[in-house]
Amino acid sequence: MPPLVTFHQFIESAHSPERADRSAGGTIPTRAFRYCEALTSASALGWYVFPPFPFSLLFDGSEIGWACPAFEGFIPLSRAAQFPYLSAKFDEIAPPWAKGFCPPFLSALKEPGTVQIWSGLMVRTARDTNLLVRPPVNMPRARGYEQYEGLVESDIWFGPLFTNIRLLRTDFPVAFSPSDPLFMAQPVQREAMSDGILNSFQVGRVQDFTEREWDAFRHSVVARNERGCPIGEDAVRRRRRPAG
View 1 (cartoon, one colour):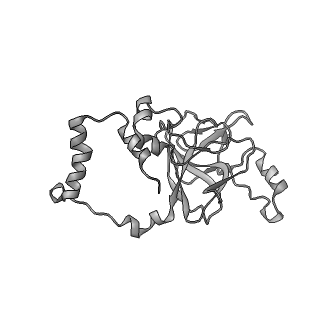
View 2 (cartoon, rainbow, N blue to C red):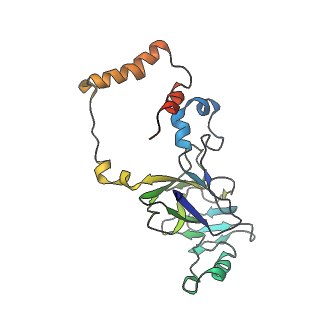
View 3 (cartoon, rainbow, N blue to C red):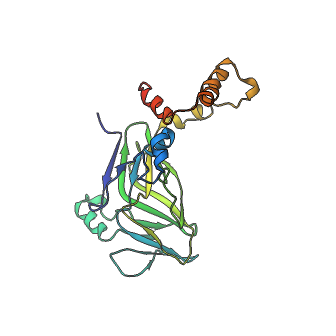
């Protein structure tokens, strides 16, 4: 059976994607990790994607500069910048019609302080499976920038896997480390995105509860408060739930 997602690496030295873990990289509180099944399940849904190497961005309110170990100091990011030496390596193995088309590592977008960062990956997912690109779930938000979310039709579009950020700090470097996830990629079934599914909802009132809702309320709220809620009960119940 083919994998749900295949990541194709352009940069051999880069940190490979990893399955996201229930502890959110060890950042969530121990009590939540042990007993909050909702939080840990959300943390593990997807894969971590890392920067291909350490680099920094500097925004002065108008122009953006970038720096990396390959050169000294910040250089202007006027439009786009290649990962150091990658373009030549790409041209060595690419067919003639693809030479010169290695994706840029960084691209300055039209909006002030907005940068597109390429992970060094291209990705393909199984049929009818898309990828939601978003900040890592339940990890502390990075200081100095906001990250946009995007939904990629990666089953039919074979292109660079990137993220867009907006720098918030001026005159202070914002650093990116290959040991910290740059973003998270989560699988989304195409069916779940359809208007037929997303428009299928309603809003009710407590006055309209039927016997079914009151029975559920008694089980999930009243009974648990009367007898007390054993620590980790939800996690145990979820693990005992049949698959499928």
